[in-house]
Length: 599
Image 1 (tube, rainbow, N blue to C red):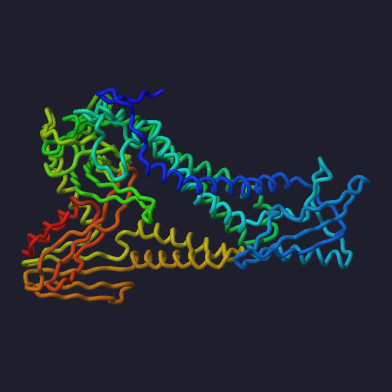
Image 2: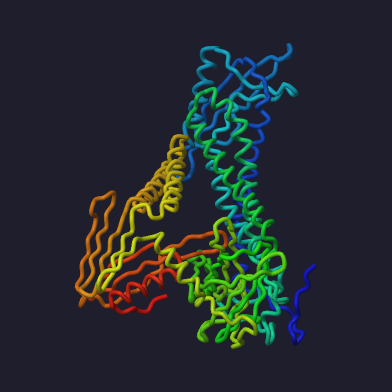
C-alpha cells in the first residue's frame, strides 16, 4: 500500500477542501441516476430479451386487454398495456399477464398503442394471438417479446451521459484522496507547503527521474470503452440480426450495422494501442538537468527498442499550460490555455539494441513552475515525442517537472529548435499543404481543394453518424427534440466537412500589397485586396488542432492585420508552430512586411 508523506514539521494532513465535497455531492446524483437507469431499465430488458429468444410460440385467448393512459404532473401522457390471456401447454391451462419486455409506461413511439389495439381487437373478435412461453417454466409467458431499440437506446444514452459524468468525477476525487494530494483549497495555484525545498521529489511519478508516459492510461481507456460498448452492442446485434433480416427491416439492420461497425472500430483501437505498447515497451524519459529548469535548460533522453538507421526522425515539443477546472457554479468545463510552446527535432544515436532519442530546449525565465495538478487552477508542463519516419508510428506524451532552478544540461549541448534537419522537415510539411511560388518582391501561395482530405473525410463521417442517429431516433419514435438536435448538428458538421474538402485559397502578396481569392467547387466565394500601406503586419493565429497518438498538434493561420481592424487570411491549416513560423519567416523575408507579436 502506498504510504502518504508526512510534512517535515510532523503536522497532520490537511483536511480536504470544502469545494471538493461540493463537487462530489454534485456528481453523486448523476452517478446514481446513470447506474439506476442501467440497472433498472437497460440491463433487465437486455437480459429478458436474450433469454426469451429460446421461448416457444403458443396460441392464446385474450380474456381482457386495456390501453392505459397515465397523465403526468407536467401535462405529459404515457401509455401502458394491461392484458390477461389464457393458453395451454401439455394439457395444462395457464394464465399470463405480461404484455411486453418493457413493462413501465412510456410515450416513446407508438408501440404501446399498437400493442394495446391489437390485443383489444383479439379480445373483441375472439381471435387467438401468439404468445411466447418459457418451455422450462410454462407458467412464464409474454405477449410481445420485442426489444424496442429506440427506447433502449434512449435509456442507454441517458445512463452513459449521466452515469459517465458522475462516475468519472467521483473516480478522480477518490484517486486524488487515496494519493493524499487533495489538500489545496480550490483556486489555490501554489505548491503545497509540506513539499519542502524540492517539490518534484514528493511526486512518486517524478522522484526517481524515470518518467513514464501516459500510454498506460490511454490503453486502459481504450479497452474500457471498447469492452463496455461491445458488451452491450454485440449481443444485441447477434441475437437480433436474423429476425431483422427475415423481416426485411432496414431501419433495424442499419442500426445494428452502426453498432457493430463502431464496436469493431473501438476494438481495433484498443488492439492497436496494445500492440503499440508491446512494441515500444515502457518508454521512460530521463531528464538532464533534473528537474527541467526555468531560466535554464530542459533536456531529456528516451531509450527505445528501435533498430538504429540513418534518417530516423523524432519531432519533440515542450509545452507549458495553465489548467482551469470547472467550478461547478455555472462553469463545469475544464479549460486549458497554452502559455508557451517550443518545437524541435531530437538527436538519434545507437544505444544498446535500440536508439537513444535526446533533445534540449532553452526555457525562458518568465514562465511558471509545475504545480499540484489537483488545484482548481494550476500550471503544468508536458513533453511530446513523435516519430515522422514512415512505418514507425511512435507518439508519447509525458507530464514533466519544470522548476525555477536555472540549471543547465551537463551533456546535452544541441538545441532541438536549431537541429539542421528541422528546416527541411518543415519545408516538406509546407510543400505538402500548399504550392509556393517565389515572385519578385513577394510570393504566391495556392492551397488546393482537398489538401487535408483525410481529416475532411473524418469530419464528414462524424457528421453522417450524428445525422443518422437523429434520423434513426425519429424513426423509432423518440421525442422530437432528439432528431432535431442530432440532425441539425450532423447537418452542420457535414456542411463544414464539405467546405473543408471543396474550398481552395490563392494568395498573392508582394511589396505593393496583397490579393486573395477563395473558391468552393471552383466558384468564387470571396476576394480580398489591400495596398501595402494598409497592411499593419503579419500574425500567426492558433485555431483548432489535430491529435496523433499522444501528441496534440495545433493548426495555425497566417493573417495580415489591416488598418481599421480588418484581417485577411494568407495561409491556414499549417500543422505545428515550427512549420507556421517557417512559413511566416518566408513570407516576411520576401514581402518585407512586419511580423507582429504572436505565438
